[in-house]
Amino acid sequence: MPALRELQAAFCAAMIAGDELPLAGLLVENGKPATERLAIYRNNIFHNLLAALRDVYPVVERLVGEEFFTAAGERYIATHPSAHGDIHCFGAFFGAFLDAFPPARTLPYLGDTARLEWLVHEAFHAAEHAPLSLADLAAIPADRHGELAFILHPSCRLLTSPFPLQRIWEVNQPDWPAEPAVDLAAGGVRLLVHRRDFVIRIEAPSGGEYAFLAALASGDALASAYEQAIEIEPDFDPGASLQRQLANKVLVGLRATLPAMSAKR
Image (cartoon, rainbow, N blue to C red; front, side, top):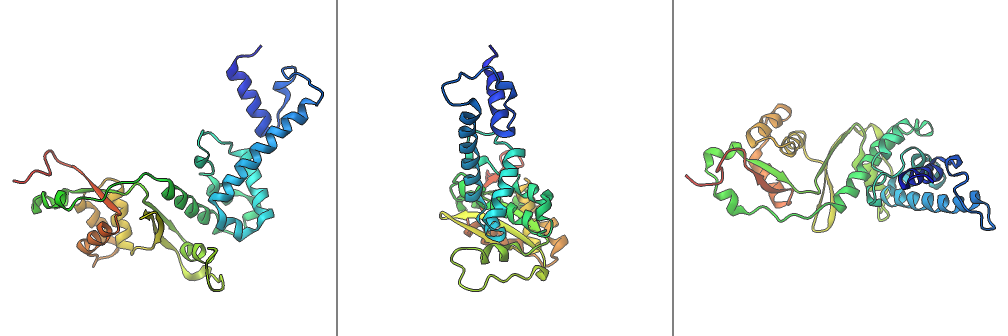
């Protein structure tokens, strides 16, 4: 008799890859062939995982249609089996999968559209965080403001693409009131995805502000983030950006870069 781990691995191989040979001789016959009984489990697994993909990627499905999405989803499930007990974690690599999926070759924007939808999904399920206290900011001497390292809200995600993803996403929402027309030649985007007051927001900051937020998200101090921003946008105003992102609850905390940074002199 194999160990439990070996039996579980054999069952997974039978479910996902259809390789039932390792289970041969281990299943008890009860009037229905073992292959039919295994097929019931396999169908349920594929149905549930495909439903999870549909929940996360409604825009992708709307763009390609139900038949195409089902075929792509089944192929993804077979090649990227779930590795996490939380079904909300399933589907993270669908964008990269679509990039390499031969039938999607004529839809070069499809992978990035999926990446945006995954970030929306992550933002929706991210932890909550209290807003930054203005008293914490006021307690820091002005000559040390450049050393501040801000913490972004856990829902914040950043994405760049050569395609007009925000427009693609907007016109494929159920409540879009006009024709779903998209000009793929309109140019690329830099996007900030975040959740505020239980609503997902997709915004397109300027090049400088995007670089500023990306630097802060990487843990860079304020002075360094500002330098990176003005390389892209020479007239970037860090003060206005900070006020805006504090009000939007994008910046929600401070990370000390020097000992006792928050103590007044």
